Each structure stands twice: as C-alpha cells, then as structure tokens.
Length: 387
Ligand code: ASP
Ligand code: MG
Image 1 (cartoon, protein in one colour):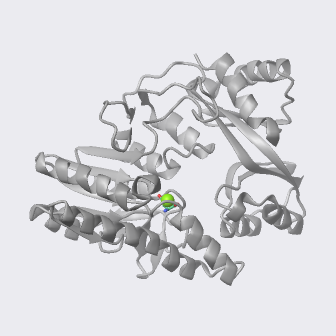
Image 2: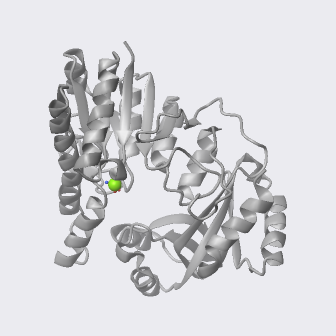
Image 3: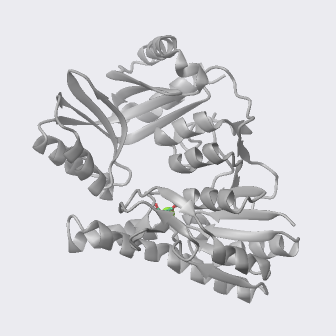
C-alpha cells in the first residue's frame, strides 16, 4: 500500500463547492487503496484577511498572538474538509500542526521545522482513516503555536512526506505546474516537465509563488520528489521537482517581481531593520553589504503591498527606498553571471529598458528595472534567453 501526501492550496479550497471537489478526489484516492495524508492551506485569501484585521487592531501586533490568529485559517479548512469527506462516504480525521507532531523553532512567523513526530498521523492511517493536517503551523519546544512563513503549507507537506517516508508528495494548486515564466504575464511561457531543486529554489526565492522556497530546500535535503499539479486536472500534466531532473544549460526561467523596494545607503547594523521588515511581512530577496548596503525587499506579504511602510522603516535606518521591479534569470547556466548579464542587458537596452542595477545569487542573476516595465522586461528576456 502506497502512502501519499496531497497538499491543496488556498484557491483549491476557497469555497464549499471546491472543498467538496477536493473531498471527492481524496475519497477516490483512498478507495484506490492508498494511505492518504492531506495538507490544507487556509481558504482563499483568509490569511490576508486575518492579518489585515490584526493590523486594524494593532499596527504591529504581538507576533505570538498573530500566530494564534492566522493558524485558525488552516483549522477552518481542515475541519470543513474532514466533514466533506464524511459526507462523501469516507472516513477522515483532522489534526492541527501541533497534533501532527510538527516541532519548530521558538520564533514566531517564519519558524523552521526542527523535527516531525507524526505518531497520531501514523495511528490514524493504520485504522484506515484519511488524515487531514492543517498546513503552515507547528509547535515549539516551549509549546507555543508557531507559523512557518507565508506559503508554508508546502513545507508542512514535504516535511510530513519525509517523516512518513511517503511514496509521493503531490502539491495541488490552480496551475498545472511550474512554467518558464508566469503565464499570466508571458503567454509564451512553457510548462517545465521537470526541474532541479536548485533552480526551483532560486525561482521561489526570486518571487515565483508556485512553490515555497523553504519547502523546496526541505525536499532537496530529504530527497523528496515533488509533483506540482493542478487540482482536478486528470491530463497527467505536472512538473516534477527531483534530484534527477535534466535541465537546459542556459536560463531555465524568468521571474518578475513588481512589489519590490530597493533600499540603499551607508553600511549599518542590519539586524534591527531586518527584524522590523519581517514584522511588516516583507522578505529580503537580495542583500549586499560592502562599503554600503543594498537590499531588495519583496512586499508581497505587506498589507496592500504598501511601499510607504517599507520606505518608513528604511528612512528610520538611514537608507533610501525606491519602488522598483526585479527580473530574475534563473538556471544553472546563470552561474556564468557576467555573460548572462551582458546578454540580458543588451536585450533590455534594445527594448528601451534600462537596467538600474544587477544582483547575482546561486542559480540566479537579477536586474532592477522601473516597476511599470517589469512585465515587459520579463517577456523580452523570456523571448531572447529561454531556449
Ligand atoms: N495560508 C498561509 C498563507 O497564505 C499558508 C499557505 O497558504 O501555505 O501564507
Ligand atoms: Mg494561503
């Protein structure tokens, strides 16, 4: 009997009809003979609404209480899905992250998983039940409820798959896998049949939302193959994130991020600023500290993606902040950063877009561009550089 972990994202459980569809898929899978663990995200935009509500009450809510609040989102999904499975004739039980034995660091928001002790999950599976686990959350050794960072349900799924030695880890969302660029921005984008952990991790860190960066890192360390699929799509289309993926040698994907602040100024002690940025939901994509400081900060997690919030924190720290776009070229081939940068710069210049700065990381090279031209830059670079 195979053990499978199936994770459903917020859009797949956004309302009752969609929850029913997921329940049907899960019951069919169980009837086919597999042991099934389901990890769920909060319904639709629930997490955003809860955070917005908290910030109405307190501009910077205590981190512990914010975790107590947002973890409720996944509890709603898990309980409703369990009920829907019962209605569909199956047998299921839901567990919080804590009940599932997801042990994390003490930190609130962005806690890393230290270990997984899924005793109750095991027991329930042995009795034939489908187990539904609330994603995105765990419990610290101090017995505080913690969260894993935005999009962290993917990490829950991968960590459970590793701990249960599952045969398959399937991540379902509203897209059928990982594309060479965001298909909403770039109609020429192609579905990647397979992708390496390193490239996938670089895409996620550059701002691609399809899979969570920490989940991919976890999968790489544990050797878990991830199947990224679209909920309800039975065509067999998917992307495999795996250790044996073969990739084209050059640029594999282009990732645009258009809610980015570029913070610059003299060298300072960054620790307090980084803490405050995390408090408002901003994530640092690139940081370069030499004679001065350069930080590229993604505001996707900031309520309203408000540039003023980040600019205010930058000013207090003595840095300037510009609202910009960031276009990252991702793939093992970008290890030759200088050559890739040279070509990309020429492509952008030919299209009348000036690259205002360049940043390099493992498996990625990124250009800072004027925010309104970010999507255009993604299309140009995709056309010219993605083979
Ligand atoms: N609900 C959480 C979020 O929106 C976790 C997740 O979706 O994976 O970030
Ligand atoms: Mg969510």
